[in-house]
Amino acid sequence: MSNKTDVRLAVKHHLHPFSDNAELKKHGVRMMVKAKGIYVYDSDGNEIIDGMAGLWCVNIGYGEKKLAKIAEKQMQVLPFYNTFFKTTHPAIIKLSEKLVEITPEGFNHVFYTNSGSESVDTMIRMVRHYWASVGKPSKKVIIGRWNGYHGSTLGGASLGGMKSMHEQGDLPIANIVHIEQPWYYGLAKTGESEEEFGIRAANWLEEKILSLGADKIAAFVAEPIQGAGGVIIPPASYWPRIEAICKRYDVLLVADEVICGYGRTGRWFGFETFGFTPDIFTTAKGLSSGYLPIGAVLVNDKVTEGLLAGGEFNHGFTYSGHPVSAAVACANLNIIDKKNLIEKVRTKTGPYMRKRWQETFSQFKYVADIRSEGLMCGFTLVKNRDTREFFDDFGTTGLICRDIFFKNNLIFRACGDHIVAAPPLIISKKEIDNMLAIASVCMREFEELMDKKLDCKTDKAA
Ligand code: PXG
Image 1 (tube, helix red, strand yellow):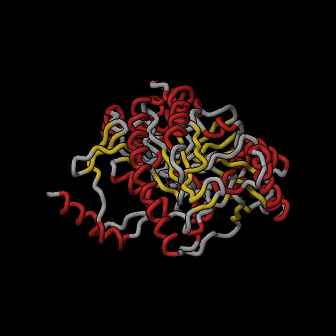
Image 2 (image 1 turned 135 degrees about the horizontal axis):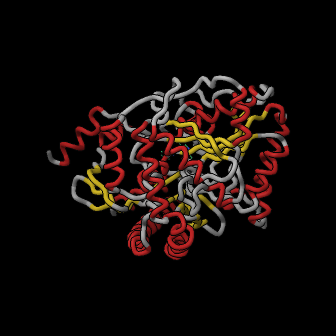
Image 3 (image 1 turned 120 degrees about the vertical axis):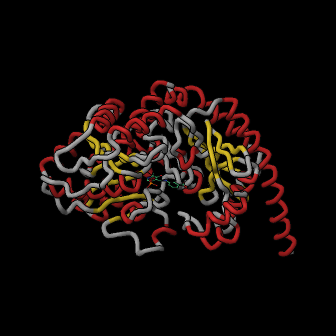
């Protein structure tokens, strides 16, 4: 079957997620057929550097045979059994022990899901059920942030702050509100230091709590670093202040670790990098490095105690704690441990990436706010970096840039006009150099294109 036939078939019946499917039918898609290490290969035989680890998830890289073997073995022995009705199985016991081992003191319980969105929806129901169980049923409102991303289910999309998602399907659902994101480059006042901005941004939470009444607020939920929002890294002063505000008003603090979790920021979890401790945290993606779908919600002892007092929690998925996913996730966490990937990101590849990412992109005039933490990196495309002037129609320019990378067999992601990267945690320094050498060539092409576009506009105006 030639690639052309394949590609036509690919869009004939399949409605792709987060895509303009009418456009895909016209222009087709690219078919990925295999992968190894940090590379994916398409049906034309191109080797592509996956600077996004799939969708921020393939932390251990592609092609780990051990996971395939473990999945096969588990499928032969016990391909499925549920954990609903007074039953369990060894794979989920092992995974739970491993998760408790890698999380900080005070986290001893896990609820399983199949995705980040399900983890977030589970957390929403859990938080409200917790407050009802401890005699404070009026605490229902959950505060998220604009430009946050928490998934595509009704709860996740509501809690996320993506206006384009709210516009489809009558969102947000009731009792979900948002505060502004802690984006220094975009929102700081002239002359304001990062530290001052971090405190001001955290105080937006206090203002929201006070305006609605603390007796109504159940939880504040946020990603330690906003991922799909464009790798928005808050100032160091932000998270400790947020934690203090949550404590002061008896509001549960929830970290959405779906992207930051399992090593991405150079610690097991993003909250460790930023020095705070949540009450609950939601995870998925890197838990199995994307080899199979699985998510987990980690719950601290205080919330667990409240939940236990509340009787039956009427919530769960057929595949909560699926044995094959659980066995693969456990093996994945052991590989992260054995290969010392987290320390490697924190002390070697993370700092190296930060230096090289800065050096590479600071040469280009349409680039501002170059940032990174561990192996989560971003920068913002701007018309003028000194005056902080953005391109018209935020997001259009990002896609132009992203498409140039993609044409040159490099996958980065455009989140609006933020360009981001999150490669597999196994990436070596040499691979970082190769990846950024290609990126540099792409950026030159992008710069020339934008020069022409802007010249053209100036000519027309003149
Ligand atoms: N929380 C966070 C922080 C996420 O990043 C979810 C929840 C939902 O996870 P699931 O597994 O239901 O997709 C996510 C997912 C992108 C992109 O293009 C990001 C995500 C998913 C798909 C695409 O940046 N993040």
